[in-house]
Image (cartoon, rainbow, N blue to C red; front, side, top):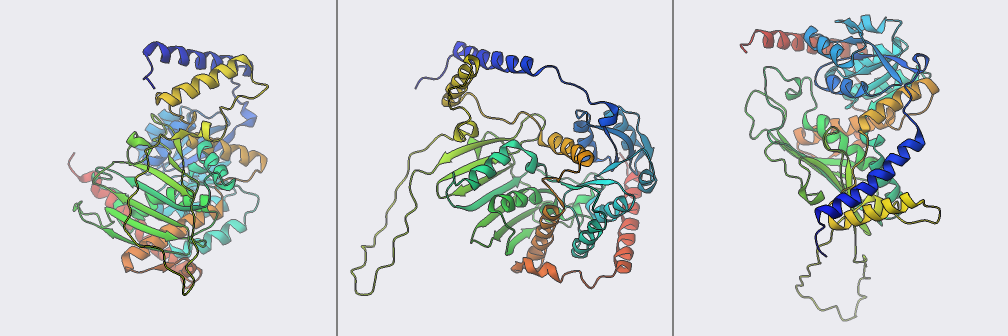
Length: 478
């Protein structure tokens, strides 16, 4: 099969563009939501993650930012300029929670303060969107579950955006419909080079405030495995190390984890900070992705960076049927033993649009629809075109949060999904630090003996330490 010429590509792309344009015209122009349909929200924490969310919140018309909060005035000024709605500015988040012009709150503070801010937000009567990892300590798992139960009329959503990706939703449908056979393994990685660096003070690099790589990175992909397997793990074992970045941090700079699920399914996970190679998707994407493996096929996926590169996935059909031969009965002649080596031919992955039949020609297809499908199939076959998701799932999850806040809908990433994810993070760090297999049922008793007063004293001590670290950073030379 010859490679496509430039004229071929332009011609096919033109057909796709014409069909897309026609579809847009048929749908009419986009309509900006009226003020009464916009949820008034505040953002607590406008640093790295909060600032990132505000860039995407600016593109969403069913919510309006009316207030922001941060300890750093410069970050607040930058956040206000980004969102462009002239929000009220607060240094104390409790003042924001008292603002009657705020109906919902997006929480993007450092992990060690997630529970405290979330509890106060619920008590203030606001809808809650809290970034992952949802809670930091075992006792907070139990306390937050009880706290949310006291506020049944308030929406609670956690920031696990892959749940809102159409590609990952398609992957789940493929798994549930058996298109991958029996799904037995998920391999996932998040490899960076250099990863986090110590610039003055980075709270993610200290165990007092952070869950390290397990909380900040692995949590997203543990959630994917839970979703695809339809359950949570039975146990986790792993190893971590602080082997390269001796710059004052005390969290591991690389972790390797194995999770065993109830049906003997397994998640194998790796996060390192010395190499960003991703061996999936023909190595066209770096850093992070998942490989979902079943007896009938495999999916390679990544969510991308959400700005330049969007979520994408490739499907590989498993050509060999899995056959489990019965054990020979006593007295029967055993099968001949011998070393064998069979190398299958390489195969090119197919986009999910092909795997799910999205590009199949059907009777009611219009002329433009048929031409678009033919063109896309041709471009896929040539390796010229990949199937990328059209919209950032971060925007989808935030838009959904506002819609559900208005309508009483149930979020795809709810409290229990968020808590299951946090439990996995907490127990993964225990497994590495204690060098043992940690069972997930241990969470039932962990933290139960911590009183609210002890928890409050601990968080106050951490806040004081955090404030001192921030003050020391400001005194450091540029």
